[in-house]
Amino acid sequence: MASSSAAVQAEAFPDGTKDYVPLRKRNYDIKKPHITDQPITLKNWYQHVNWLNTFFIIGIPLCGLVSTYWVRLRWETGVFAVAYYFFAGLGITAGYHRLWAHTSYKATLPLRIFLAAGGSAAVEGSARWWSSGHRAHHRYTDTEKDPYSVRKGLLYSHIGWMVMKQNPRKIGRTDITDLNEDPVVVWQHKNYLKSVVTMALVVPTVVCGYLWGDYIGGFVYAGILRIFFIQQATFCVNSLAHWLGDQPFDDRNSPRDHVITAFVTLGEGYHNFHHEFPSDFRNAIEWWQYDPTKWFIWVNKQLGLAYNLKTFPQNEIEKGRLQQIQKKLDQKRSTLDWGTPLENLPVIGWDDFVAESKDGKAWIAVAGVIHDVGKFIADHPGGKALINSAIGKDATAIFNGGVYNHSNAAHNLLSTMRVGVLRGGCEVEIWKRAQSENKDVATIVDSSGHRIVRAGTQATRVSQPLASADAA
Image 1 (cartoon, rainbow, N blue to C red):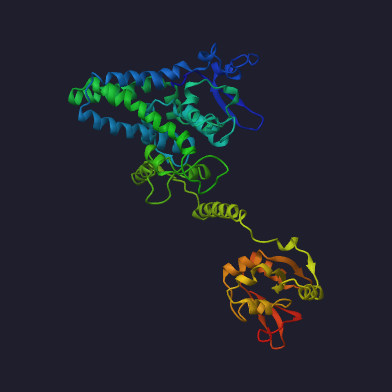
Image 2 (tube, rainbow, N blue to C red; image 1 turned 180 degrees about the horizontal axis):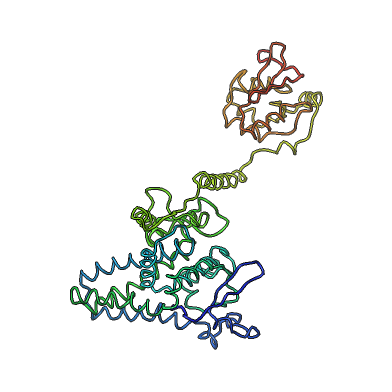
């Protein structure tokens, strides 16, 4: 996991972005196929494994776990290991992630040094290397250029991308110019191995040994095993946060929100929000959601160590939430029968409508739309006589309050009985336009028996007189 301290050189790409990669990685023979281009077989499987990362991520923790059989855990060491876990965790979440990868706030030199030290204690690569990969993850989420795409499998996104070799040519390019201008990031990158050994192993060993005489316990529990747990927690952001939970802001990509992931990752579990609004220094926007990283940054602002905390406008956040709700409603709506769309119905003249009704069809007209109520006559709650009396007539007034102001359910049921549109039924267009503009629509009858469709403040008189409710 250690990052190289070799010299770096800028490389410009056609799209205007830049990437800074170790020179030794740029000197590969472009004609030689990468091992990842070959299928894994019994003969070459070991060539696909990144043995250095495997040793650091799996081998050493296993040794630490086995050693616990002989090394007793003292409560003082246990408490310190938990505290040091949070220190290293904040180095990743508040430092590597929100400060350097997303520049969601600015930090003074003392805070940047503190966060770089915590990140070193987590043993997850330098801030420069980590942030570059994470920017690629956001820019190319769920694609082949995503370095830890969950589309390649949950296990791959969690740990497989670290223990198996990746083709550097296929990882998305990102601009890390700003990181190369930060002296703390540059120093840590050049001295990464020294930083890791000191912060991840030496410090916890010395603290536990000097304060309560538990050198071995400090090395095993506050050092090796703590590193393992903080690494697995961070990996959950790449895997669990793209697999478990809801998508309240956007469901086109895999990121999800879930409280369990938030607890595991010091607040990084509200990942759907984060991918929608990555420049926001918060992951959790509700007061009751678990996000200690957010509060850590806020406290440092009060202390004058952090500033320019970025938040996305609440109006835009709510728009995103509402759009996703609307999308889900539209998806649900599409599974229901709302009747034949008006634009797909045939246009029928009034005389033809009356003639067809006299010829045995149970047609009624409501708001300019003809409905066949034949199969519903026997089930009509108002009785057969009333609905039969409206056949062959314009029943708009009857349906909308002349006899009974029908319920929303009745309107929905009636829409499934559409068979045509009356020629000259201009109230249909008024109705449709009013619905799209969220206006109240009402149909009334004037003293001469003409129907008037009112949409908001607009009223239109229709020439075809209605049969009155009494006559019906």
